[in-house]
Image 1: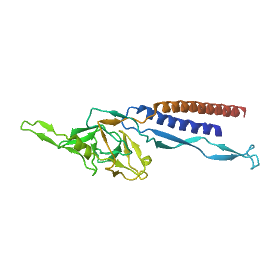
Image 2: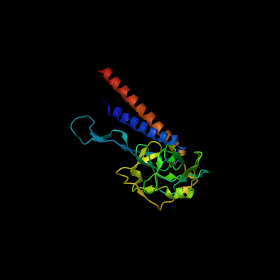
Image 3: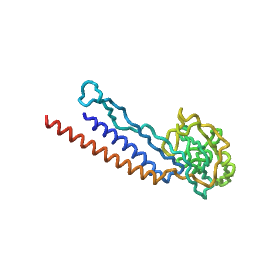
Length: 250
């Protein structure tokens, strides 16, 4: 099969993958604490060609075979903060993370500090919007004191300052080694290193960190990706037409 056909095919696949990444960034423009991804493209292997396809000669030349998405990188730039009237909203003016625990016992890191309290059957506990438990510096669930009167009415006594002091902030050695997960969460990997409690990292109460998506930049990259996709599709079509013509001549 024609090299140009296969080269254009790799270009189509890579540009489609890049388009998916940019589209996901823009889709999360209003997601609290979202960190966008940036695809890194690389060229495929090169082969040595000769004009007549025979024995190697001085007129040899190299031919590339397209591109592929080599990796994706997080864009860890700090985004803007917005003030909130919710006393259980928190933002991190640093590279730290909150740690959460889901119902299956799995721990995650997140920059989303929109918290609330929920009754779990025995206690009132601090949770995020997905119902995951927010952990303290010792990786324990945070319980909020409450009282039940003689009529069975429940009164939750929240000391917001104490809750703020209890909420754990964690850091890893390599933020770029984290793996992105659903529900605005990150998973610790061998490349990121273990999550370690870091009481020296500050928290800002009554504030939320907005998405770090660069709308203008991603829109430009989408246009570039679309144009590249169209050109690769045109090369593929032309290559297919040439092969069809050659086969008909035979």
